Length: 116
Length: 363
Image 1 (spheres, chains in turn purple, red):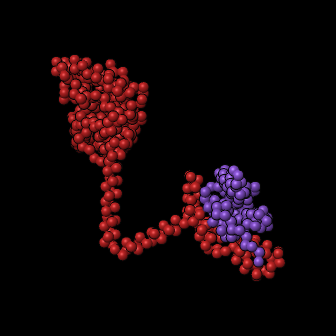
Image 2 (spheres, chains in turn brown, cyan):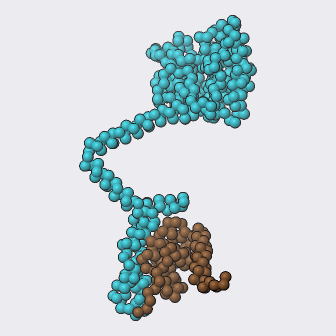
């Protein structure tokens, strides 16, 4: 049995959504595909939980939505990044990288040289 | 922050639309997932089932989405409201007492506020009324002659007499009508214009001028049948025939509500006794020049008091005019209360007529 894919870290879904819509407006299903594809299917999102997150981000003014036409000519709701969302994305990304390097540094620590 | 409130308000108004669009959005998602599964070789029926399973509990996510959009409180509010109604219905006596208390409280507050608003807050209904000031505490009409020639603080100063009633006779039918004797500048000071005809001209308050009167819109309707040709007609006031030269617009009741007549003061310079008699006491009203502050006007007023005292044809006590009330009232920054001008009958409706908002000094 393959190992269970890792759960998404609490709070990182917002950052991933912001990143996904930062390049071009996208509908919910597109955001889901993009996150899964870019993570080579490592990150699995409970599909339904995407929508409360989208609505929350919109309520916070970080993304904006607009109805448009999907690739197969159906009506779909497209999300795009607002300027406030762009700022938030940068902040979260910086914070994320700081944390990753800090945790990495901890994990990389070797046994202390007994002589020192 | 404001944007967020706006969005919430839009959601409130478009609650139905919110639900419809959310359903449409989720349906789109499920269809796309289903199509992708079919394309990958899953049987249609199985694809449908699996798409739903992958999505999860739709209703739960919808509820979470509502909450995330800041509209869940609306549903809570509705159920709270229903609960409150049910509770009130269970104990009608308590409900009545509560409603009665609230009603009385709100009613009393509204009443008090409307009086305060009319009396203290709302400015007089005249152009640039913040420049209108009452001058002093009541002087004999003779002092006006001095103010006309000496006072520099005002664009114009006028006076009006204490409230009095006149015997009006029109077409043989007598009536007692409240009116005022005013100086020729009175209307000019207020910036009030006649609706029909004119107000008084310079010199019409001097001896030998023709006997004229200005009437209120109300009197014009009641006694003259709103006759548009009323200008030039005559009425008899205290036995003297006067020509009507003007009709004031509706609502003009200065200085007190119910005032229906204005006629020129007799400023007979050949008769100084009548001019300076205290029975002729009048209230002075001035329109400050734009650059003059209340304190400047007051300083000038204090300086002119002794000259008024010496202007009497008989010797006045040295302390004449020295009482504290004899001044141009200070701006409301120093005294929050309005100031009262000669008015005996004060009703809530006409409260603004009896009280003047103390003028703001322009500095």
